Image (cartoon, rainbow, N blue to C red; front, side):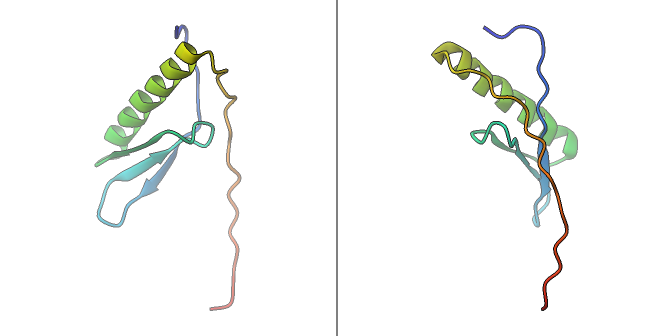
Length: 77
């Protein structure tokens, strides 16, 4: 059962048609969407909660947070 709080890094990917897709590197099952940043974060929070409840019910250990490294790479066009 969930208790306390846990923090996971989320990625907000702006979509060409508007809104944001939410990805959670530590929880690849979590893919969510929101039309605004606030909605995307709330939907992501709900998805994280659901996945963690499933993990707890199945006895799956909760993974540690994963903070992705971002780098810029230049290539010839």
